[in-house]
Length: 207
Image 1: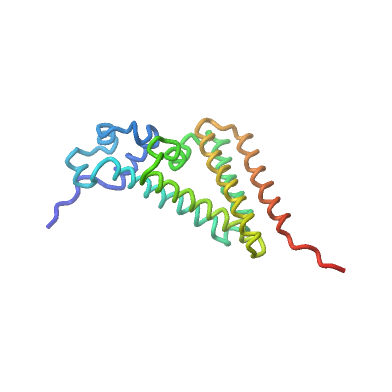
Image 2 (image 1 turned 30 degrees about the vertical axis):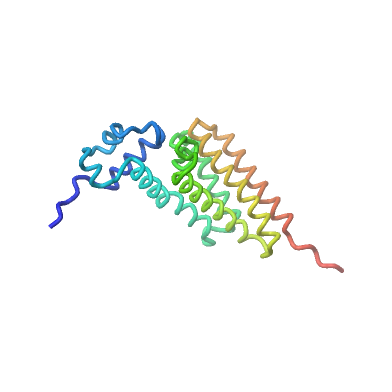
């Protein structure tokens, strides 16, 4: 019979994520990681190959917990129109900024700003997560538009702008983004959505 693992993997990964979140990949030494995860070196190497393997595991965990749920929310028509879904998501971030500055921020944003994101497998993994969010914004926009290649192209452009707003709000929130500034970001998102909706509206029928 196999011996039970000496630690709870998910709890240890949550603690590792917290360390990477605070320090970044490069500054999170193995010694700090072992202390944060509350495991021995032997247990570490039994469960994970190296620090990079732990980092990937934390990215996957954040992907499942936050990115996937955000993608699902934006893609679900039961949550309202595409516009309503997008503004609801951004308003939630604004609410956090107004309440406490959203001091935790976004693990994906932090990871993308770190040195480890510059090339290689880590960069590929982070970009894949960002592209999934971009596609989710585009899907929400397209749900409110007539179907055509032109509308799809415009929705793609607007989705990238909305993704930039989303990331910007999370980064600034960690730095103590004021609630008023966050509300202005939501208003700007609404303007972007209104712009594409107006440009893509069917032309009036001729008399």
